[in-house]
Length: 247
Image (tube, one colour):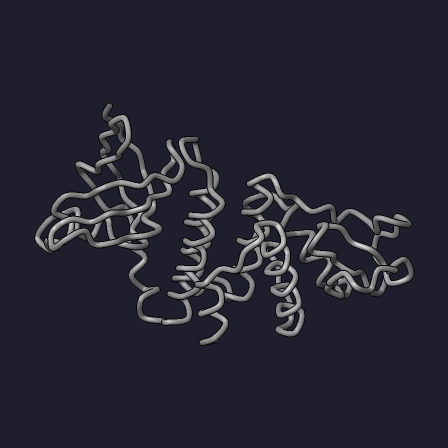
């Protein structure tokens, strides 16, 4: 079967001297694992179009147990990210999340739009990495069916106390007055950070990245989003560990 779609290359691996194995997040089929013949030849148009962080038009052949990319034409290559090691590492973390969380063999246009918007803002310096990252983490987890309940204290119903505790393990919030199980990991949120965390999951898509926070509050927001993903997916992400090491 032959079909055409658009996709972002989120992982690449050389196969011998000439060929390449890639993972692409596609509009029509979600994450696919595909072979690209001759892609390591720099004179081949598929070389750039199937490299990491390339968003391309793809012509794909699907057999019973494999995908092969026959043609590839670049739409956008996020080459600016390669000039900044921190941004590049963060982009690779986004790709690892996409590879882990995004659907396979299903339409994934909303997932693709989210990561493309995040990479664009990161590449062009439109928003700070510390703001883009928790927005991407929380929205991606929500799209995958893991939306936390941040409406009010799960015990008393308080909406905005001076300090609210976010419980990454359960995805719920409790006010300080109701906080009883001190053994469970919690992240203390002031009103501004609580509002921002709510924004990452409840805001309209076009307004997702449209807020600002002081650096200290952004650090807390990142702690909350990282902790939530760790509990939801029960794993550490190697690219995140490396990103935090160099940041």
